[in-house]
Length: 90
Ligand SMILES: [Zn+2]
Image (cartoon, rainbow, N blue to C red):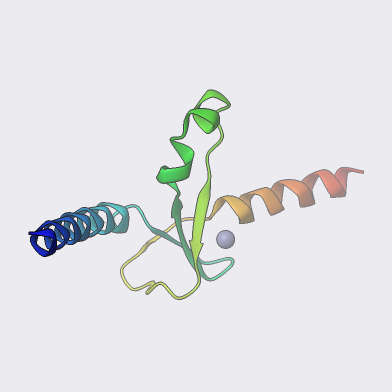
């Protein structure tokens, strides 16, 4: 009996992971500047703490295949650009 219960739980978890992976895959972009794939880290962004403060977290993937990825500058490179600009002004 216990064995069957455990097997069922594992199956459930596997299905959820697969669905998450497919959904996440569509929202992964490739940043040409830092040569990495990235996406919004919804799992951490949607926590109450971050939602209340409008904090968006990002995840970077160094080894993610960039083939067919939409090109989009990641937040880190955008921030760098911003910092460089302010640095030049001073
Ligand atoms: Zn980047």
